Length: 367
Image 1 (spheres, rainbow, N blue to C red):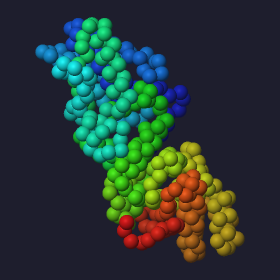
Image 2: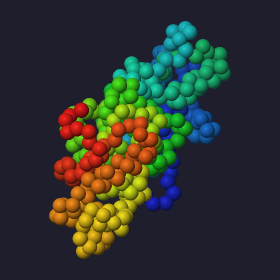
Image 3: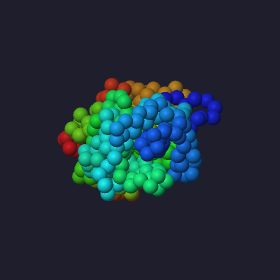
């Protein structure tokens, strides 16, 4: 995760807000011959930002407008991407039709808010664009039968850095946003992706999913169980975001995988595992070490250790199953939040991907 800059952070605009502004500009030009620049829109909460146009094209039966997305100070993968909207006349009575242009994905799996086969343009951006079309159509006395094609140059490559391929959204990015505003470092997009991953897994009838803290543990868990990519929920630091959504939308079985330090924080009851928001409590960890029979001098060393992995090395040197104990405590944290609706196992890996601790594991066979 990118490092949060100092000072007050600048907000940005979602891809959905940019697409809505480009839609207003293009439809106005289609009916009047002139592009408004800058172009203003009203967001769902009443804000009225203005957007400068990066592209204006008007031709026989079409109008095209492009806007460079500004994500503010958020490390958004779509920052500075161009959101391009091309409008064409639809057949009489068709209303507003949305299409995926180059760089915008298409939904292929059930469980998302958009049906399979549709362009990956989420419900709120669709509504915002449809409202703009209705408003302008009323002003000009037009039918409002319009085809809206959205494209993002380079979007197919950018999408590889997102959850889209795993969620079955193929060919590019999604047009997203519920408020139109990107709040820097809110982590809402990551948690939203975790939730959609659970939705897709449920719709596909999966009985076993995994949430891992990083790529090493994810690869190890996937190798153990042979799980498909869309069963792997990119939990990262957001254990709470995963567990709270699973409590409301349960699945039969969850594997939590991660490194010793992060899962020690989950064992201690932390649900946000980011180093900036929770820390390993070495006194607490040393007490667990003592409960397992560690000699007093080793417990004292654990209290003053620099890293959790240093404590793990002490435990391994003395053949003390500290990683198993942390896995069991982390499992207890998860089970308390899930209210016994989901069977949970916790697997702890070292930096090389070797399994060093486990709890609740039903079988050593692949699922």
